[in-house]
Image (cartoon, rainbow, N blue to C red; front, side):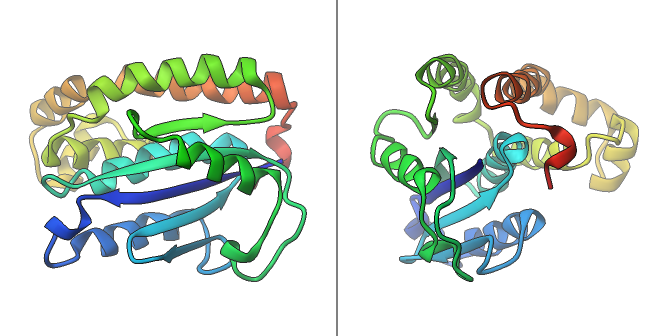
Length: 208
């Protein structure tokens, strides 16, 4: 089983310089190669193939990357399932994961991040967590989003090291993470990994 993230940029036209594209490419490149694992298409839409255990972390880091740009956001649907046909371009591959991601994306009306899998109980629990988390995440300011993104990507760093890397004070980092609900959001991400193992019997040793 794999996860397919399907997304698009909200208010992309407000970013006249197209900064969002560079930020999106940079973050997607961390999780795979273009076009086998990810592609940007139809202007401001994208797909990413990733392991189940890393999929929510990837979605959170993508959101934090894009939210660094004022008035710009991103919608992401996480689809879980099998891959029936593998192409050298992700947008030409097929399978239940792609179908679930597409169906989920089409239903992203009120919320900007949801999940669809073969298990409705898993979806119900995780989507409740996501809807609650979005009350905070949708309001991340650009500076806060930058700190969140780097914290997600560098979880091995303490706040002092992170502050030095970003050229900020440790207190600024601490306050930004509190405002962002970072600790609570990462507890949700940890719960996601546990549920993935519980419902889909994913062996971490077999994950990429």
